[in-house]
Image (cartoon, rainbow, N blue to C red; front, side, top):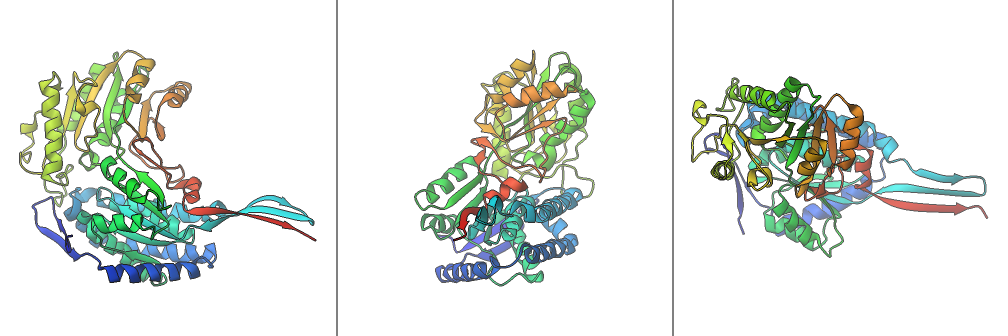
Length: 462
């Protein structure tokens, strides 16, 4: 077992952080303290919890000037976009705080002098959050703040690549005066995390990551009666209908494909365009893609940073090479991007046409800056291709016809369907996936149901 977790910057391989993993004795103490703190916290009012959670948000935002460059060093996103993640963090946290009172209120079935019946929402106890590196604040806040608002204690295990993010959460919780032990950032190996689940030492786990890792989490929790929430991969499609605004669609879809170097579970990874608009759409998409600036994310002029690792970039390089060997055409000259270099995490964005579903780039998650574009004949053709996937996280339809959107949306196998937008998470709507994109829900009123246990009351006056 590794004693130390190391984070190195994708910018240049330099050391960002090195932290010792928790000992068995430390884990035991953390779990005892969490259970003790949670029992007291569960007796507080929602208004009291809201006051503390608002203070957590304020404390995190007060560290903004330090967090933004720190985030770029850890995971490579251009510094010019760093504030956007914290803005999203704030939006989601404050929204979930604002709806907690309503979401956690008892459901009254009957209330008379002779009889009262109601269903309350009780805390589950201890939530274990395993967070990823690609949107490290956004993904963690989806669970952390709602769990605290619901009366739970939280353990946060952040990805080794973003160890400092977990520490920022701890700093914010401590500065907000959260009771000791109620929230703990914990440094664990994968084996230690699995053992917590196998032994049933937590009440629920929320995991965000790859399908392969999600299967390991699910297997570890099997038979332990630990609740499991999984947000896994995506191969998110978009359909540009014949009545779409081509430029609007291209602007949004290119950004949806290449923002964060395509390293997002809900990034646009395949685009289907009605044949009448195909040429115009591709021309616009190519022009937009050629305008990206690949380089050091700490430079303010950079719009596309390195991928998280050379190995991740190599996966995408192989997908592109394999597709081209099978007949696809690459429309972007990677040599025009000065920093595009084999053997490094720096990878130029790429658009592929003449692709089909025999190619891995159209079937398997890329999680990088590449997108395939196919021509389709009609709505039915597009729906069939969009559903031809093991994943189902989000899908977008670009059209001026709302009725057509609703009809198409009903047939799409996905957790979220967008009209004329993509690659966005609305905290008022539940975030969920189907097929291998996961199970469970975060955010919205529905998200609170996964963080609480229903309890029925039946009172009769003698």
